[in-house]
Image (cartoon, rainbow, N blue to C red; front, top):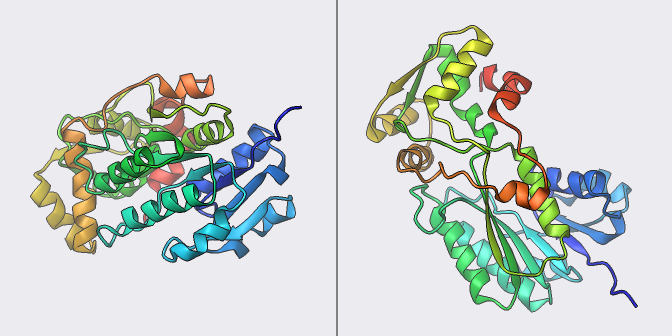
Length: 300
């Protein structure tokens, strides 16, 4: 007799990445809805999934006691890293509780969304990811770590304002980023979650090329017909500028750390892991930019 097909669970299913993963599970990979459990702090926002036959549950990572009931019955679980960035240490505590609960309730395998070079990255919240990877390694669970490269979508934080002023101020220097589309990462997570592979592995999911700010600026300028000069500034000046634009100090430090990480080469590694996992190429910059120009040209 064949073993029953595993039940798959996605946390953070009302978020942008989580909701895209669920869509890929149902529509791209054709996983039957009755094999899926999704969790959210706002389960009422997932009524459309409930209507399709997906099991929708409430899970609040700030209340670890809610996680056991949320995770019960899942064979494989996708732990989408939470958005708790404003309080240092909070996100790692949430993730550790989730890993412990998954082990306690009998989940077999956890897929986790991390970031490249988690142990050494200059990104300010990299220790949250590295600590979660360590918790998985120390647990009884099987695990797949997806070290997701920088989203193309993150360009929306800097490019619209830069286009408006004609200057992109950056502390990244000539550092490069192997950008990848969030949609591609969602597809990869769906493939990893629904896989029958039970081996422990770390995959670094990147685009097929790494780009500097000047590479991106040249293309955006050509597409929009607007001048866009890249201006090199120090990390200190960047933090000052972000605060002047209303960023809370904690968030200004986080954003400045992205440029520091880029300058240090933490986000520039290019791997073939995405193709190995999914069997297809990730979206290229020159395809993504024209398709998403509205995201980069509207003021935030």
